[in-house]
Amino acid sequence: MVALNYHVQNGDTIQIMTSKVTRGPSLDWINPSLGYAKTSSARAKMRQWFNRQERQTNIERGKEVFQKQLARLGLNVTPEIVVGMFRYKTVDDMFADLGGGSLSTAKLISRISLESELPDELIRSTPPKTGPASGVQVLGVGDLLTNIARCCNPIMGDEITGFITRGRGVTVHRKSCPNITSEDELERIVAVDWGESRTLYPVRIQLDCWDRVGLLGDVTSVVSNERINIANINSEEYDDRCVISLTVYTNGIDQLGHLYTKLEAVIGVDGVTRLRNIDSQNDIEN
Image 1 (cartoon, rainbow, N blue to C red):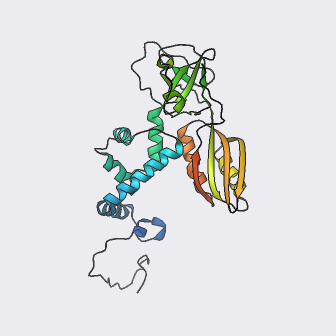
Image 2: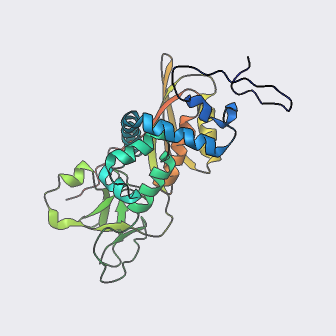
Image 3: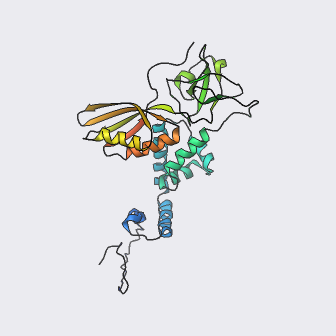
């Protein structure tokens, strides 16, 4: 007897032994590096089999992946919105593809990021100008100073809204920011949109890790290899655990998501999350 991934040679005599119990293929057979299935079409048919057999499992897995990806990037998007982006019939169909691998997390985050950059307001009456400080447009109004709120620190790809301050122009917040959702002066809230400029935005992220020699160096190397600048970094050790906090400059959600994937592949890193603010300063002014 030989292993299932044995490479058949010319002249071999083959006897195929079958089982009376129908178990179907193994997930390992889909992995091209293991050598079970030689063609992409064979692997595709096996994926289809798993999708049919494990739809409910894939739905649950996809839901978990969806929530994890949005939480770690700080995005506030409902499954129903994503269903429309990809033209699925139901939320379960989208979750099933995400859990089964037909819809990759990279494609999910990239599409959400792209859609979030598009204006969701009515047709503009006049071409808005880009604020010099933040790369943000105030819809329907020209030449207003805009600043990024430090309390929620939005970056390109986040859903945003503006708050007209006294003396500092418009402060740009994430739509889910508690400071803006609790604001009772609704007349000072304005619609804003990301402009076309490739502004770099500071983002504070946290890595929960198992401590080991060389961990900090590996983390900084990953960030450097992605050509992302680090503003500051801090590490705190607790017994055999370690929490690394760092501020990086990124051009948006898409690049940030790619960085997360690279960091999560570092040995010892358990999880990566985006912190809500850079510091404790509240940017809503009276």
